[in-house]
Image (cartoon, rainbow, N blue to C red; front, side, top):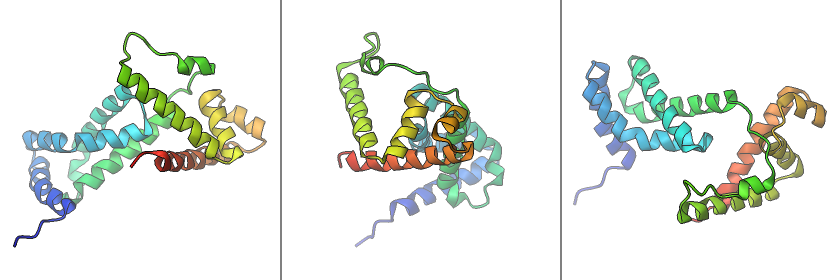
Length: 192
C-alpha cells in the first residue's frame, strides 16, 4: 500500500527543481513556475484588489518582481509562500496608493452595465453586493461608519480624521481593522 504525499510536500517536490533551474538562468523553468502559480497569485491579489483587470496587471508585476529577486530565495522549497507574500505585499501597496473611490448614489451601484454584463455575472454581482450589505450591517457602528465614509462616500483620511475627531493614524488603523472584520463576516456568510 502506497501512502499519498501531502499536497504541500508534493508541490515542493515538483517546484524545487524548477526553482533551482530558474535561479541558474533557465527562463523556461521560470515560465513553468509562472504557469503553476498564476492562479494562486491571482487569488492572493484579487482578495485585496477586487478588479479583474487590475489584478491581472499586478500579477504580471508580481512575477517580474519574483524573477528579479529569485536569487534572494535561499530555500527553493519555500517558493510558493515566498511568491504569495510578494503578491500580498504588492497588492496592499497598490490598494493603499491608488486614488480614492468616487462617490456615487446607491442607484449607481445597482444599475447594470448592459454592454458587458451577462445574466450570470449580474446575478453574482447582485449576490456580492447583498453579502457586503449584510456584512456591513453585522459590524459595529464605528467599523461600518469608517468603511462607508472611506469607500462609499469617498472621504479622505484627513476628512475622516476631522469627522471622527481622531488622528489620521487612528483612522488608518480603524480602516484596517474594519476591513479585516468585514472580510471575516463575508467569509462567515459565504456558502461552504
